[in-house]
Length: 513
Image 1 (cartoon, rainbow, N blue to C red):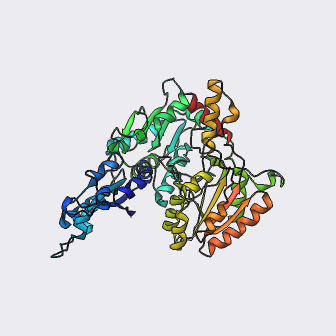
Image 2 (tube, rainbow, N blue to C red):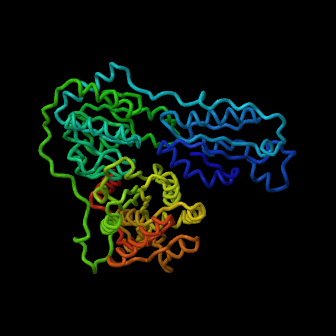
Image 3 (cartoon, one colour):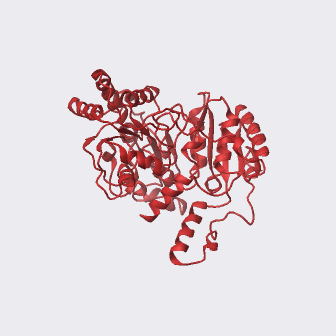
């Protein structure tokens, strides 16, 4: 993706989104500007406040590279290098700052533009044949292997190879709600519903493993600690990731340092493409010691919801699944109250994860950007996020309407920045203070916000507030119909505050640590 931001002020506004892209290892070329570097060319007032001496310093710690070329010829090379570096593994954003004086300068002779094909990223990084053999050997000898499917690609070939590897090894697979779809959740080998944090069921499975294969898993060290606590990790750990190539010490997004018996500084997908034939050629299927496991948890159905009950996030998920029925859908993201068991994933485009940097107000921008990328695929782009997230970035709705980007945004509206209510409740109990005050500064009420009207004011289809099941079914049917017509749609669904019990337990454990 390429993005252009307005001088230093636009860049400061965009830094949270850049940090999200950095944490998600998303390739982007960001172009910005500074006022004329030559002070003699600056207009009074406005050019001076739009000029910074080292503008790249605003985001240098969370970009792979930045540059401020001083000529048109140098700018050509900057773009080639920025594109090459952004798309080299581990991928990430790059930034080019263009002097306003340079931009407005009369161009003499047109500079030569090199063939971009000669400046492409290099081939994928893969381990040596010896390391591939070691990885395959450990996996074939394992009795209870687990695959942690983390940051992997959207390629169907890679998806199929992960399934084949898991089946060849009878390996349990865990996935992560923070990352896009990596393995089918209805498969018999999908061990436990995905979560934003490692839930107790997943931790129990991990503790039983004798070999852990990590495919660029986000926070491997924290995940192993959640399973083993203060005990030594008893399993053999194989960590396939080149993520350390972009760790710089400013941001702690690199997480803890995990123990690894084999550390392959390589890309997961092409590495699995080499490991899989080595496993399948052996012809030896392991004598699995995994005990019989229950079938994967099916998403909730509406039959379990009484029509007069207040709406919850699980009810919202069930109603949404009913509304889309057999349609191909891309669930762009869910809120923190979303749980892995609420949605079935069968394809790498079924789910796109969340914002890697937990960036405030990222929901609308992510929803619209993903919907733009999904144009022409036949998939219905649907995003679910909270009311706080929506309001922080709601002006993006106009962009979607203006550029005719079909997208359905369902707001799980609990009228609160509820995550902070939980935190304030925990601190109140810890300090012996009044718990009833936890809502102060967090509750989005008095006056209530009509989110449907916010959407309609920008030309979108705005529906709601929806408060009961019958109205929810009718509203989602109307929304899906409008989406298929190419409209931008927002549905405001009032839901009870709260998280999935597994998420709550995991968050409590994280908080106590």
